[in-house]
Length: 476
Image 1 (cartoon, one colour):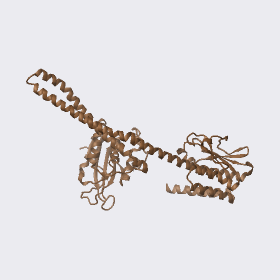
Image 2 (cartoon, one colour):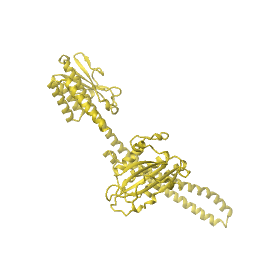
Image 3 (cartoon, helix red, strand yellow):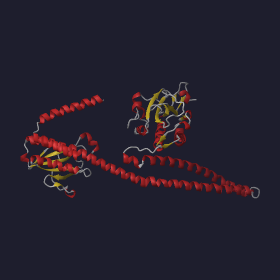
Image 4 (cartoon, helix red, strand yellow):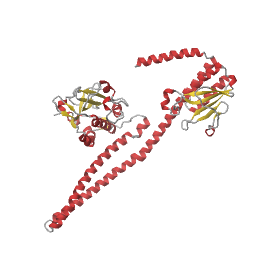
């Protein structure tokens, strides 16, 4: 690929070199080009470019001009600048009468040239639509423009178009960033902060459930007291208490599920919508020591357990092969939790039943972790997290590309997805200084990621990475 790109670039340079020889511009025209390019690069504002565009023909060739540009929101052609009056006030920019065309036009007393944008960037510029034309450039008096001058002005207008297009994109991106920052502030105010009230709601709900249990206990004490004095009343109260007790058990279960859902959603919301991400234009880590088993893996497995059971996927854990106390990792808990969540949700979607070497039909997710000694250099060990799922092994091409943005393996079409999840995983792991990978195996696929350990001399029995995880250990 690099050689192909290099060849094309050198070929285009040679083509341009020959083109300029054929153009045979006069010295003054070459100086006009150089002046325009220098000043267009010096200044970043669009309105300064408008002024430069009309000033160069006037100062070098004594030609007057009017510049018309399609407004990026209204998509209407507006007169924005003239060599005689300078910038046109915004409220007067629609006061003109000039035709729009994809080819040069000869008008009464003037030439009108189309200003074309860069077609390669058309997808990022809504105003282009089906046409490359983003404006018109009117030059007058017409009788001062001979054939050679006409050719120069056509090429000059093309240069205006490419520079104007780039500056429109820059302005569009600035506006986009401004909007995103405002949106983040709105999210923080209207989503993140109100979400904290749910925590208070859960605390109050827990207190009410506690009061409810206390009333039930008092009712049980009364029943016990009445058993020997008024058995009929005691039995009647028992009939009343039974559905109350069942309701209370149900409410306790719903409370626990609601609390877990709140904690999970809040962690993801507050992590993904963190203001720092948007201000810096990348994920900004807030690292802390984390127990992966109790703080990440167990809560996520509990949350996804009904889906695994629904799809009849067995879960096999090998986390115990490395005790928690031997692992020291400092990570952004919210982002790394979403890495684990992506692997689990993918396991739910793509795990398939296979027949192992013993003839057993199994449908399995197996996860494990292990220490890789000196994986990131001398004394810098890594901790590798493995997720093996049974199913059809990926091709080598798919396994190499599966972490690319938007890429989906050939066998993934039966499940909904955007191809973004594993790309997100790759980004998060890499900004933690780690690496990701996929290894197709005999009975399925092994996805993994490796994070650097912070303890420079951990006392561990580091093992080698499993190029093949034995399926027999999964089906015992």
